[in-house]
Image (tube, rainbow, N blue to C red):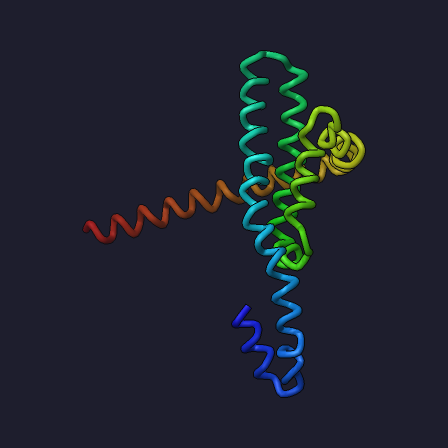
Length: 166
């Protein structure tokens, strides 16, 4: 916050604007930051630890319907996590984001709501079916490229190693 204040105050067109709004900004950002500190570990517990344990129980219980339900959750949760990491800067400005995230996680994983299943069947499954061939093609191209690059890297590494040892 201090870096932003210094950057903001150094621009001639904005002098005084930050100082007038500094107290209001700190007052509005502080509860959000405190909530983030409290809610983030709770969201990790709710989003990762509880579902991981339930997934373990589903796999050990040999009930395919439970395993499918938790697999659906993990697919939706992983896509949400990717989106969240890409949109991190924008998300950081949303007031009470971590409270919204907690509510979303609970909706996704609690059996009475079956939110992950709803998102999967209504949004993700139709989208994936429509683009499955293109995704498979791009994945196989990516795998081929990665194999080629790794073999080139191994060859280069062995050449460098052979030069140093001779």
